[in-house]
Amino acid sequence: MATSKKKSETVSRSSEIVYRGIPVSPGFVIGKVYKFESPLYPAVQERIITESEIPLEIARFENALIKTRKQILDIQKHIAEAMGTEHAEIFNAHLLVLEDRVLVEEVIKELESKKKNIEVVFLEISDKYAKIFSRINDDYLKERASDIKDVTRRVVKNLLGQEHKDLSSLNEEVIVVAHDISPSDTALMHKENVIGFATDIGGRTSHTAIMARTLEIPAVVGLVDISEKIQAGSSIIIDGNRGIVIVNPTKKTMERYGKERTRLELYEEELAQLRDVYAETVDGYRINLGANIEMPEDVPSVIAHGAKGIGLYRTEFFYMNRTDLPTEDEHYQAYFSVAKQMYPNSVVIRTIDLGGDKFLSQLDIPHEMNPFMGCRAIRLCLARPEIFKVQLRAILRASALGNIKLMYPMISGIREVRAANAILQEVKNDLEKEGISYDKSMEVGVMIEVPSAAITADILAKEVDFFSLGTNDLIQYSMAIDRVNEKIAYLYEPTHPAVLRLIKMTVDVAHKENIWVGVCGEMASEPTLALLLIGLGVDEVSCSSVIIPELKRTIRSVSFKEIKQLVQEVTNLTDSIEIRDKLHAFMREHVPDVLEF
Ligand code: PEP
Ligand code: MG
Image 1: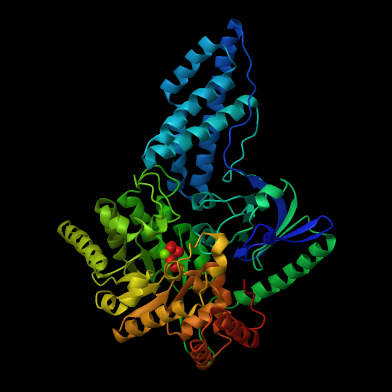
Image 2 (image 1 turned 60 degrees about the vertical axis):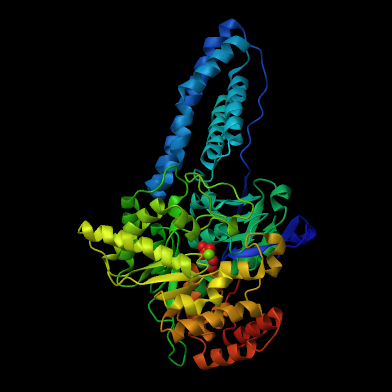
């Protein structure tokens, strides 16, 4: 955990430097550093040209435009093959900039009048447009400014004969080190070449961290200033289990990690044996173990890791890295594909949870001071029913398969549930009129992730079929801790008695009202905390696929009686650290070799 500038760099032995941060995605990797820097224009030298050089400069410019277009088309193809066409469409806007005749003609006119080299002229004009767009108070147009800057950087690099670096088009194995990586940058990573990453900022429950776990890329965040200190090409170890980053490891460190790899491989082989068994305690108490996904492409990993269903499908990633909104059919294809692959196991589809740290340029959502507390998730859907209805129609159509459940995020009170259900009913009526079938008994649940929802869970339980505790936000909102701010990460305490009471309260009233309650927040992804949740009575835990084998192993190593006893004891404690220590002591005694991170 990094709380001050000095704390991230802990040991410096000969040339080896050890940084401590927040472990967000398990496993470890050894590789070479690739510095991912915020997009900047390359430096260009101004040169006065003669009249006779003008045609040459125009030809250079046109060649650079053609080359840039080809590079963008190649990237699109690469992304479309790896992740689907919807992800590739982000680059359509870049192509439009290149094809903008007004811009190209203005550049040529300026070249003829100013007689400066084309790099300088092009940079001046396109930067002028980027600035105009970025000053407009409209998120969509502001985003166009980034497209112009991105294309300009590419064109100028091509004019200068410099190579262009991009996370989606890396062609060698690297470890990415950056100040920050957005969730949409992370979505463009490929596991084959980005084998790990480390960032200065971020927290365990940021969506970048969650994506890293889904993609199974070891990662450490909250390293304060590693991106400034590190040299590109340095040798580096990312230890996503311990939250350690080692730069220029010594021979001894390399040997230690070599041995660890052998141990880890044996451990993984052992875990693989658990794929088809239930998550059942030694005294026969069975718990539903689901997986969280962000995209249909994540399903094979869910199946490979032996999850029995999907407890959370975060659909908002479908809207990212593209310039338009997904159509009803695109939604339908995605949901149908996930439900079909998982059949007969159930799939909980959460309606879009945009806002917070997941922004979108296609929707003109005004900038807010506190986006996590702003027009996010269900609030946005209720404010924009025309967008919400497209998704609901697609979910209902896919539900005809029979294994889909629907869930609304960020519910804060009964009025929102009723308003969302009223829209759902309208959509059902439309489908019926059109003779389109859907699952009439599809379960509809809500996420309990705002304290007001947990406190009024008895009221909400009467209107829904299930609850899913979103502990990432529940902790953030109940303790006033921004979940993506690494400076206060030490205050983000899942074992705080307030959090445990909110969870217990929710579980007790859910059961009283005969509805089931799951947990899909990251608390479920830590074996120690998952045991706590099970002891508090939750019926399902849903976590990143990569954690499932370890969680099964943990659950299968203890008895429910022991878990209940442990939870009884910890709920009598008053301090989060005491509670955490007691849970760790239990783990050391019962599941000593579990690789917690
Ligand atoms: C949560 O808040 O715990 C949750 C699962 O939702 P998200 O992380 O997408 O906000
Ligand atoms: Mg949430």
